[in-house]
Image (cartoon, rainbow, N blue to C red; front, side, top):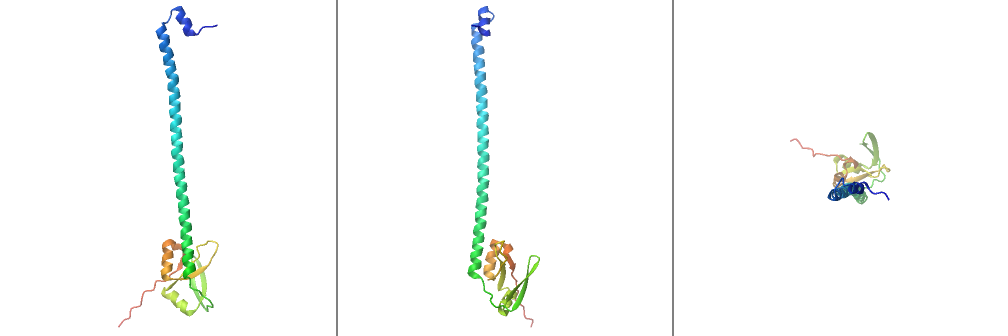
Length: 166
């Protein structure tokens, strides 16, 4: 069997036994140091991946919470509209208003037209994007809806009381 280089050098008397032990210890420590460095690198990468996962989870939870809040606001608006809407059956007067750049028309009676002009009633559109429907609501309810979503208020006249000149 062939001897290792260290054993051959030792038997030839070119190096001492203490020197071979020191070299073996140094090699062993170098190998252990490399594995420790690799282990620490892997540990650092695992911690970094864990932190990134926590950040992604937080962001996802925020998005879910925001969506749930939006859904709750829409449900509140729908409930306000359903419970406080003023019915307009058999209207003979056309009340025109603008929704964005479009001119829309509702047929109401003269009493409701007067209330719309004086700001007692407001016109609110449905929060559903697929349904283009308009509702008449009292001013107080329209202001509550405006706090939740300003874009749904189509017409809310601000009527200042006229001052009489004497």
